[in-house]
Image (cartoon, rainbow, N blue to C red; front, side):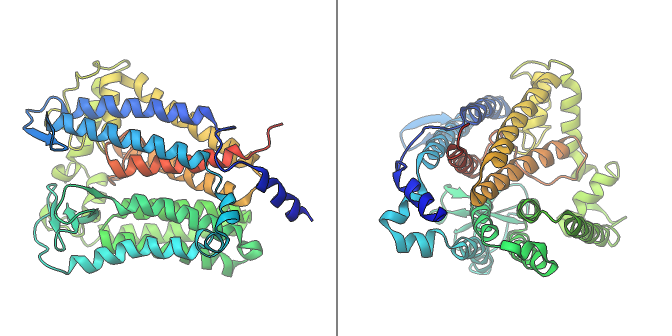
Length: 433
């Protein structure tokens, strides 16, 4: 009887509506994007750039091209966020019931698509030439379909041998959050049992391992597994078994770290493999591995020289050929140098407000699927902020994760905005008291 009542209520809802959208999340995301534009341009504007052609029409410098492309992805992301937030996906059952039931609500499809990205990368790695790309400079391999840099395969070219590419790991984070939310919605009492926990840990672990093994992206692999694990914890409510699981996972992680450190300790930097071992050793013994630890060392110098209120926007000295990836992974260090401790705390405060609003939505919604999606997005943003800031301040080893909505990177910006759209969509359906 209640299901019929809910169905009648759902049928009365409009297909598209902006009513009830959480404006706090919208405005905070816009403020973060302002930081993105300002500091992405600040990080690259000092360079003597060659002229490049944008859209075969406008001649700009490469730093201006980066700024315009970032602005384009922000604009596209905002549009996608508002579209996703306003659309009532449940109404699709009225128009395309079979597709809605067997495709849109089917977690297996999202899951298999996620895994297929990295299986595709693994296959294409062995097709054609695979030389180069072991340094920071990216090269096209696999008949020009994928890009390789620093020995990692993190981009798929939309058109072979083109500069238009995307990071499949960013797409997969969104797809797996949706897939896992549907699975947990249907889990019932399974999460109260050890075999159920083991099953869902395996489900979370398979795509995480594919990301690591096929694209050599340890940071994304950790984030994906951690996000899905947090969703499972929230859905399960059995904190004793969850605590035991965390203990086992932590012990395994510690053993893996030892397995990377012990065989490589004392070797020259050039002979340490894989690169994850080099980064862990550089984190523990920065003076013994200066080349690998240089990025975080320069980030620490940048933060220290910023003081309380910073050197002023555009006045950073560390970004001038000293701080690698200042517009990407290390952009928080640049913010702290140019705006000081005040600027860094302001950015962290914006993230805190955003996460707090998401937490409130997750607590207030009565829909299990909506709650799991919001928890997944909240975990994704929170983990990436935590890891990025801890890497910049040398609390964690260097991992190469972007700062959400601030670091340059079209895929990260676009799909983060889409994730926010799903959060806004969930918050819109909360019955206001």
